[in-house]
Length: 325
Image (cartoon, rainbow, N blue to C red; front, side):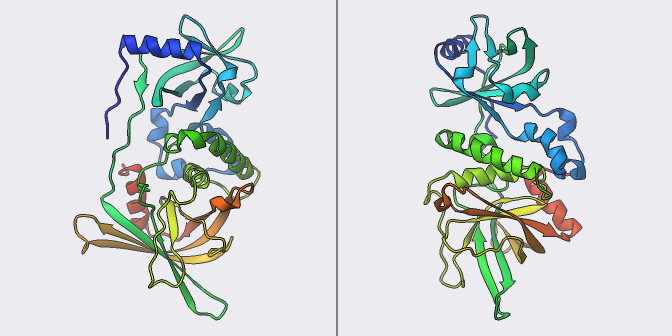
């Protein structure tokens, strides 16, 4: 893991001047409390649609346009009254991220209420956003199987794209800056839909991977082909101990919404191809996600696991979230 570097005093002054002189958009996220990080598996992974309204603030960022921001000489950022989307952060500790010459920076502060609305005091410590250089110990692929209309077994292979490590929790900064406006719009739509639906989005982390996929240009994901398979391979863009998200830019729909599928998850140790771990689990498609305004971006199917064995549940959880205590 790359180390976070704090700006020097001179660099901090240059950044404050930049914030004062330019209409710099900010991204505000609720800073997760230590007790939230130590929550049990059951409490941290399952939310009802009603609970998601509260928990979403910890996962989903709120973008504040530059026109709604005024930076005072004292290092105080005023959020104009039109920035109503951040009202839920009042009185809470937040992480504020922005870009300075294409360099991601952030600071942690408390959002306070004042006579002019909401305010953020820029602390002495401003840090660079660290690069996530964690590598997976495993190569991964999956096989998706189901019965067709002739009762024959159809098997579709699925691979994680070459430019993604699906064994790291997705974060907002994974999404390219030029795609974040569109991604935020899709994210808000998916969260709202979840809040008004009987289908829970869980902790919602998979939605970050989904909007990243749906806002990327075709061809930026790997397009693996295998002459031995009966259908074109799918992308696996997210996995945890609750669900796996499949994605495709094919015009046809290889996966049916609300369909049942058998999954074979194959983990091969990078240092030894002879060492594998295979997980067999049944699943159902809980939700289809797509950008209805641009179907060429593809589709994403969130497949929820059924009756996952305890040892397999632990293995997948620890791959993504770290060791259980």
